[in-house]
Image 1 (cartoon, one colour):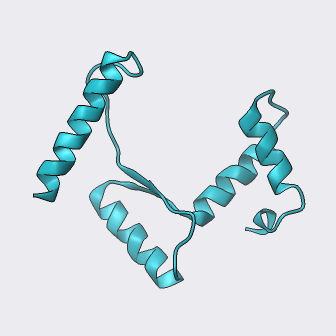
Image 2 (spheres, helix red, strand yellow):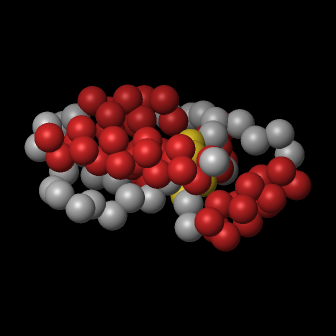
Length: 97
C-alpha cells in the first residue's frame, strides 16, 4: 500500500514539474528527508542504514551543518542564501561540527 501511494505521489509531482517547465520529462527521482534533529546516535545510524538500503538520501543535522559550513567557507557570492549562511555561522557552534 505504501509503495503504491509513494508511486502515485511521485508520478503526480513529476507531472506537475514537467507541466510547469521546472524539469525535463522523465527525471530521475530520489527521495530525501531533511531532519533538523535526530534523537540519538543510535537512531541516526539506524536511519542512515535504512535510507541507504532504500536508495534514499538523509540530510540529518550533521549533514546540514557541514553543507552550511562549506557554503560559509566558500568565496563571496552575491545571493541571499550564501550571505545568510555566512552571518548565521559566524562564531557559532555549527562551525565546530
